[in-house]
Length: 162
Image (cartoon, rainbow, N blue to C red; front, side, top):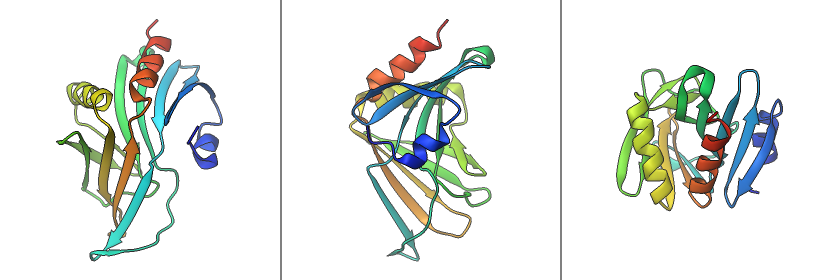
C-alpha cells in the first residue's frame, strides 16, 4: 500500500475496503460514496524554471462514485495547495491531455463525458501526469502510477452501483 499516512488521515471518516498495487478504494456512508484513490510516485516543483522545495498537503488523484447524486466516476485531483486563481491543470495519460478546472485546492474535468474519457485512459495507461500552478506561482508536476487503477476503479464502481 503506497498511500502515505497523510492520505490515510484525510480519509479518517471512512474505511479502506480494497487495495491493489498503487491504488486503494475507500467507502463512506450517509451519503453512500466510494472512491478509488492514489498518491503520486514522483513530484517535481519548479519556479522560474528551477526546481524548488515547497511544502504541500496531500496530493491525490480520485475517481468517485456517489449514487444518490448520480455521480458515476467523477475525476478529481488535489495538489496539496491552493491553485492559482483562474488557472487550469492538465492531466496527461498515454499521450492524451485533458484539461481540469481548478477551485481552491481541487481540480475537475468540465463534464461527465470528460470524466468517462479520462477513466478509459486511466484503465489503458501506465501513468498519469498532472501539471498545475499554485497561487504562489509554483508549477507542480505529479506523476501517478496506474498499476491497480482498473481493478480499483471497477471495485469502487461496483460497491456504489446499487
